[in-house]
Amino acid sequence: MPKPKPAEEQVINLRWAAAPLLAWAFVAFLPGLLVLVLMSVGRYTFGVATPENGWQILGRDPVVLAAIRATVALAGLGALVTAIAALPVAATLRFGVGPKWRPLLVAVLLLPSLSSLVVRAFSLQLWLGRQGVVSSLADLLGFPPTSLLNTPWATGIGWLTVQLPLVGVIQWLALARLGDDEVRAAVNLGAGPVSLAASFVLPKVFPGLVGGFVLSFVLSFSDLVMPSVLGGGSVYVASMALADMIKVNAIASAAALALVLGAVGLGAYGSLAILAATLAGARDRVRS
Image 1 (cartoon, one colour):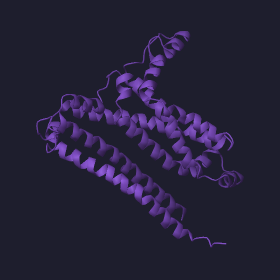
Image 2 (cartoon, helix red, strand yellow; image 1 turned 60 degrees about the vertical axis):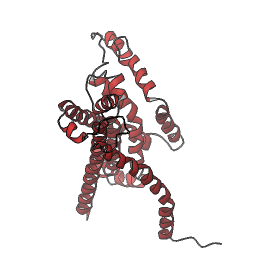
Image 3 (cartoon, rainbow, N blue to C red; image 1 turned 90 degrees about the vertical axis):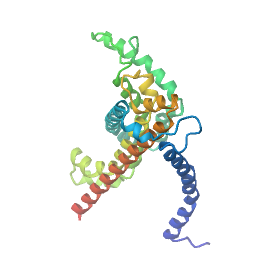
Image 4 (cartoon, rainbow, N blue to C red; image 1 turned 180 degrees about the vertical axis):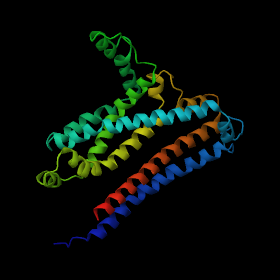
């Protein structure tokens, strides 16, 4: 009978197995990033645009700068609401559903993600329009019929509808690290719902909160469909500015704006990762 390999050797083998994937990620990402940088300073224009420094043009354009600020604010608020709203979904998957039915519920949650985002956006118009479901319910309850279409609210509802299942599953995966024995021991020691949530549930789910927030923020920050189809351009976001630049062959400015969008996303992830690590270290010091 073959002798089992030590855990350290198994970890090393897994790292070598992941090496081709990491190499492919660098090969697919770094050349495109380099071309984007060259395009932003006017060194590479595909022969369809006048060489120019996109960073200088971007810094002098108040409309684009306002679009970036509005996108950060709208996407940040939407990501925060989505991360909080997904907590009941994660808690239901972890505590409210048994192992037999949990895979089916996860599949049902993720099934809409396989459909087209454009189709889902247009289907939401049936709910949010003046003759839609929301307006009809408001009329039945005695409120004046209203349309949420072509407003920032519609954009936020669209983002929440699309991202809530994904964020909920991410938080559930983080919450799955909380063992049943830990919960039973805490309850047997007299921990109430508040202390149980503060001492056991939140520390376990916090990485999922961070990951869900970052995923929601990045998806919202770069989205063009929901602000256009549901928001109707009521808020001029950065993705709209990027599309407008491409339409008029402003290649350098578009490349510079694309790099800004990427930097903001990486900055959000890095900041929250540092915050999560800091809070985890502080919690470990308190416990020790």
